[in-house]
Image (cartoon, rainbow, N blue to C red; front, side, top):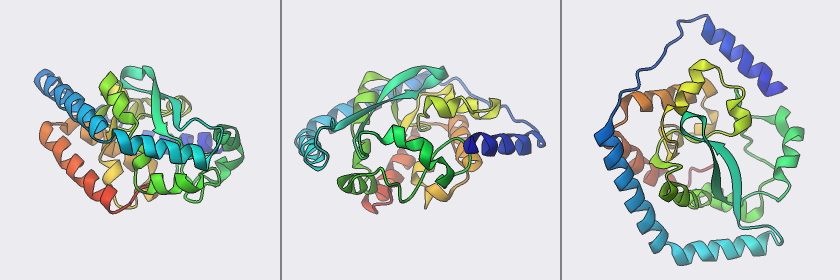
Amino acid sequence: MVMNKVNSAAAEERSEKEFRIIHIPSKPVYDILKRIFDFTVALLMLVVLAVPLLIIALIIVIDNPGAAPIYVQKRIGKNGREFNFYKFRSMVPNAEDMLDSLLEQNEMDGPAFKMKDDPRITRFGHFIRKTCIDELPQLLNVIKGDMSLVGPRPPLPREVAMYDEYQKQRLSVIPGITCFWQVMPERNTVSFDDWMASDLKYIEERSLRTDFIILLKTVGTVLGMEGI
């Protein structure tokens, strides 16, 4: 209810301005090269990181007995297609059931939910979020073609249900593990509208050069432990 009111207010404010339909250029050569790069890098990373990934999964099981180390969640991809999204578990098993009681403490405007001191996060979950290790299973999504290494983050179905037509434009490309928003300093303080604007900027300007720059900045973000 709170998020609906906030998003409605943001949409009304934006409707007072000129509604902008972004230009989404067709880039078949870029799309092919990007897919080859994504698949190759994701496969190599999974092979190289196989042992560390198994160790992380074991620690999660020890830290949170009875819960699967890989958390599978429904997300929305290109053109509104729903897919299974993989993450290392960083929250307690009943995290989704606890969400309704925490909505009023949401620290972001718009449909997305972010809370710095989220009580649902486990002890080891804080570490893997801070280091972005929790995102590594999404390399499987990249292999499958559900996601790319670079692109707008895939939203939850309940978030998309609250999107206006302007925001739905971010679903016009394959979502990614990292994006402009992911490498912003203190990204969780960025407004939802600015987050959406950065995704739409990426869609209009996407290129191999842009992807490479974002990937380099992502390495800096991970090494600086700027997750969460």
